[in-house]
Length: 538
Image 1 (cartoon, helix red, strand yellow):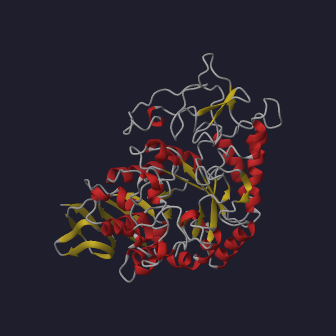
Image 2 (cartoon, rainbow, N blue to C red):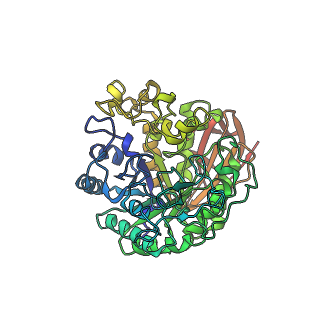
Image 3 (tube, rainbow, N blue to C red):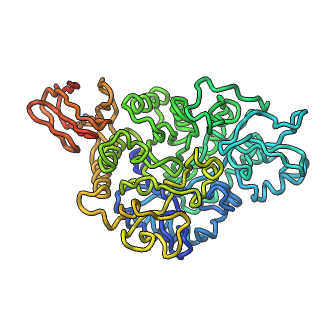
């Protein structure tokens, strides 16, 4: 029997922004539970929740102060268990973000660690002496600006933080830390959780020799703001020791039935695809991994083909997870607007592409509505890097604004109180209650159902066809079904010569007749055909 996650569609819920049940302006667990029928009706298989653990919320929950407690902002452990049980009743799996590489400075572990150099947890975090001139131990940068080291006068040492200074990195070279982390994971598995989404999965270990990174071989495209990208980050992440930890984590999950782990590889470009392959190779590491490779501005056929084929080469027995959006990047319709005929056309094209890719598929809340990025002013921001680097950096708040349920209700039905981020008119216009027949929401439901019903789309193998830009084309074949999927990644029409019998079983802005196939701007087609079929760009 095939594991459920291999053909799954996973729906990411950002708890702060999904549904507020209390009127405090922040989404919560009870609100998510109240919307489970909507999620189940989409046809997805699993819900991924961004962090709900106790946290001072300096980085919106990615700074955990207690791995074993639910933050009161979202509810309590009983409400979390109710959510899991109600999801299971509806046939939905539930996974939760595990932020294991670092904690909040408010975590009891760190409070004890910083007290002295000889207490029980003195070596639970990455501490190092200043260089002779008082400067940080290495040249490593933080993702959120400035050095990745913060000086602590109490210990007279620096501690490592890859993100905010209030997010100290755990020392995974210490076996006691590894044991403690595994115990926290076991705590949630014992409560019926179906698996984990592992945040920054390649950041767990650092170079124990504390060697400085060399300059990046390729210059960063955003050099003015991306100091992190100016280095080849070989000593502060993706260390070889990471593999052994992933194997221990997999051994833990294998003690339970039907558990899945998907890791977020914090890396851009082709290197991220290589790491995905390495981390999912065989059956003793992660079940799946995904990277930011498809979450960036690149929107061309060569890029998508390189991502998929690169993973196939790097991990022929591995399993990928593909997504176009999440809580950290601009929404796909806005991000790729320069290549689109309209927001509606891009929403349909992106959905059709994603649902045709081999592997597991991820959808971020609101994408099923064709949601666009929210334009915010400085006074509305909550995201630390956006506040620090405004206006050069817009930050992540624009994709995190609340889910819209009722077009004409206050705050589009998200909350009866003032929401933590504003609901603006362009976003409210795409509310669930305004999406009837022929809408983007209806399209997503049909696309998910079609993927599940098709052996070729749900588990078929992929073979790419030689096509010029901006055409992405490949076959998916399984059992007695073969489909050829053709996508026009531009706003201009493109014609094709077709030989052999074929029919469009699904498409948009596509025409197939005796003269061939024509894809208008952002058009696409899934073609059903037999042997002897061929297609060429004319």
